[in-house]
Picture 1 (cartoon, rainbow, N blue to C red):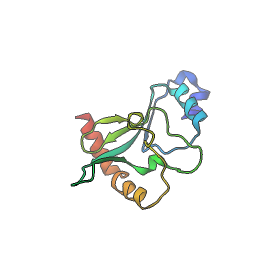
Picture 2: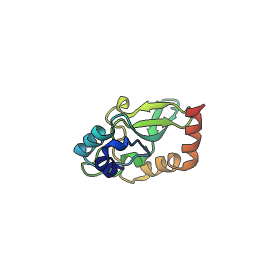
Picture 3: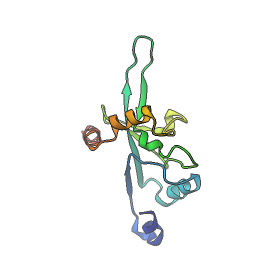
Length: 131
């Protein structure tokens, strides 16, 4: 889509990226932002896990959005998180430097992936966002 948008700028393309993994560096992300502007919707699924007696609650998101972990890869501009329980969109940039963070395929990343990466969760969250 990026190549097509560069070759045919009058096409006025739009893009949606589910569980957007990192595939370019900071310069590439800037170029994507310049090409698409607000016509790009990159998002990852997220959920809130309530805390326990002395443990605070935590928000986490599909670990695929943090892949690949090593290297100079950056997330796409304006990455949004879609809450699977409420259908609410949250700006990743408002959640600090850890969003989307870096994923290395360890046990914690794998658990987040299993909880949030599959189509059933995405479809449910999308329906909640629409209604």
